Amino acid sequence: MALQDKLAGNGDAFYSALMDIHEGLSEAQSHALNARLVLIMANEIADLDTLKNLFKAARDAGQNSK
Amino acid sequence: MAYDYAPFPYIAPPGLTAPEPRHPVVIVGAGPIGLAMAVDLALHGVKSVVLDDNNVVSVGSRAICWAKRTLEIFDRLGVGDRMLEKGVTWKVGRNFFGKDEVYNFDLLPEPGHKYPAFINLQQYYVEQYLVERALEFPDLIDIRFLNKVTNHTDHGTHVSLEVETPDGPYTLETDWYIACDGAGSATRKRMELPFEGQTFEEHFLIVDVEMETSPFGDDNTPERWFWFAPPFHPGQSALLHKQPDNIYRIDLQLGPETDPKAEATEEKVLPRIKAIIGDTPFRLDWMSVYKFRCAKLDRFVHNRVLFVGDSGHVVSPFGARGGNGGIQDVDNLGWKLANVLNANAPAALIETYNEERTHGSAENILNSTRATNFMTPKSPIETIFRDEVLNLATTHPFARKLINSGRLSRPCSLADMSLQTQGDAPVRPGDALVDAPLRGPDGDTWLISEVQGKFTLLGFGDTQLPNIDGITRVGINSRAEYKCFNATDDHALQRYGIDTIYLLRPDGHVCAVFDTLDIKAITAAYQHAKGT
Image (cartoon, rainbow over all chains, first blue to last red; front, side, top):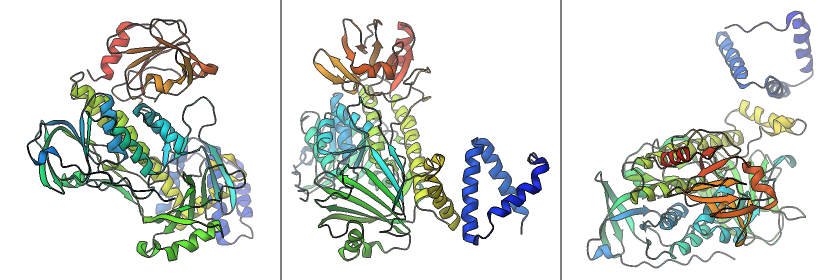
């Protein structure tokens, strides 16, 4: 099932801000930052069923990648 | 000073010269679990024979962390006070990342409990005290050291055993065979029962050192200190505990690629210890290098053979859920087996031991597996997440709760299991009782000392409890013909409420709660809790 689009008109601004926080970091630092981000966002989302659904969506979508 | 391992005497068993009458219970293994089992049964008037292939207590401190619930059970068994007096009391755990503390937890922040969150006490003391307690029941407990069970056969209605002694072999018969023969259970292996779970590849070094100077900082308060990647042991974890006799337990993660034999040598261990405690003089008391697994039997009840403790389930040590889980097994089985043997309950009651304790051990395995996975990341990405949880923890409280250096043993809830009657109350059906200080006709006492060991109806205030055959009555802040106490500092009232009537099982778990005095409902819940 496709996830609902919730970013509306802010998509580009969000994406650009996400790239910005990685600016100047090594690959290892970026991976660490992403991990912190997942943890922080999980805490904000909070609901375990929602989180598990998102985990599944992320994992499933990766099956098509090379 | 090093513990004096005095051997227990071997006495030639009667079965060597003439067949013994069939015993009601044979317990195989005289570790903490087997011994506690014998004492528990004796308190219910049940005779047992305890067989052990050895004749000394545990060599090495091994299980050292005894949880509050275990101590409350030990209190019922008559050894709690002694354990508390000798043990090192603690309740605070501190987690460090590198050299900095990132999180601490208090396992018992409130007053009004007889026993603390934890004591540390070497397994050899626990076994010694239990042996000495068992010897106080010469008519009920028959401990036989250097009696090695070499075979057993379940005949449906009883079990026969072949036993090896220094004087040769003999045979025994028993109604019930209780396997308390530990993680390597020979009973389990003979029965070829699958023992499935997760094996961890990490090696850990356990060292006990004796020293005068406390490593717990200036105020010398014993706590549980756990380090992720400490400066003295880069990239690995470390754990520090205090035991009695100025002995400190140091646990060091060594990684998967380790030669256990080479690591368990003074040459390798001394520099590791010096890296932690510096130039403080110390004596090396005991050391061991180990790997562990989390595994359990599918069932703990196999007709007349019952598995109790490590023979049925093993966990990693982080969380202190091995020995403490085993004592909860004992607590659960003792009154049930006694009721069945005394013909007060159907044999089906034993099946609820299987139901309740496979649930308890699954909970212990889940917690212990999660802790071990957090502590020993198995891939680069697991390491990243673990480290970033630790980094976030300094600033963000939510991340502190994700730090898992062991979720320490708590009493298992038996809510929704088949012996309990559904209901809602501050202490819910299935929960273990919560202690509280009381004042009674004989002075100050504790709830756990007054209501455990028998089915008890507990009421508060003006409630007049009915007299039901087989149930003891206890009133709090009541005036009645049965035993009544006052709730010291109102702790009992705050913990139980004043409007609920509680029916407690002999193992101190609530099995039913009532808002009104309904004798029929109470009687029905009591019969239900006995499996009838």
